[in-house]
Image (cartoon, rainbow, N blue to C red; front, top):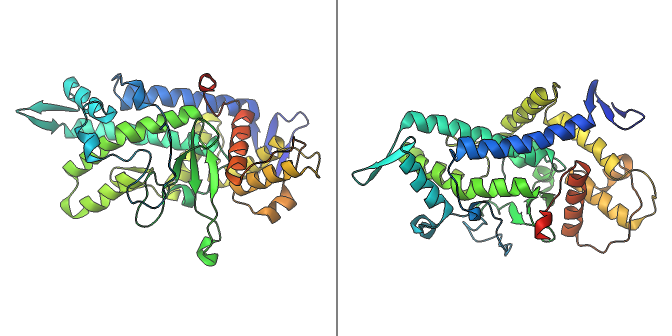
Length: 348
């Protein structure tokens, strides 16, 4: 059972009390801590040009060309001395701890590499937390398969927003797809600071991870591991993350930040309750609100029928929006409800 207190400040979720103010504060703290951790532990204090964190200027939405994506790393990029990944590699070698050049050969310290990979993996887990908690949450089985470039099996899922100065995830997973063969596109907005962090991770760190995989992976598994790093978002130590790992990450966040034993499943119930607060019951005849609410239902993996039974409406100005624009409007509203801005106001 999910119930709110009279003031709407606390929610009782299957016996667990969630303080909404504390929840929002802990989300902000997680973002601040993750940015700091990325710079200190993953980038190792190396100052990179701002281009490392910038979002791509445009997106052609190509979903068919294999290897195409916003952060695909080509051989030309590897040879470009001004590419952020190349700069990062050069600075690492000058630090001389993780790696260094000797007689023209780049040598890696295996022990230091192992420590660094632990930091990289943890940082990626915190990026995942922010992706999951700062938008209507997807299912773990859906999120584990997210890709940032097109592959032979499926299209990419990471795109530039069409209406906001940030990135979006466009999934092609539906709960009943295995039986029906029908996939629904669900669009989730990435908060702009998280988008910048993810951009730097894929643009700068992922090429280094790939280089390490080529260096140390056994020959029989190299092609498989290379494909994982070049395509999947959630991969570390040469292995793709599974949904149970994502569940554990969310559970760890709730226990460490709120002292509550909540994982992905219970968080979905919490998110549904937040949606009812985001679009509270008011004017049931408002067509614009109905469209936004249906988009919000879909973002949570529910169809129109489920929305009719479980979710409320509110009054709003009549909006003429495409389905993607509606999804992005829902994502923006969701972030603002949690106290975040979807886009950098200085860029508007």
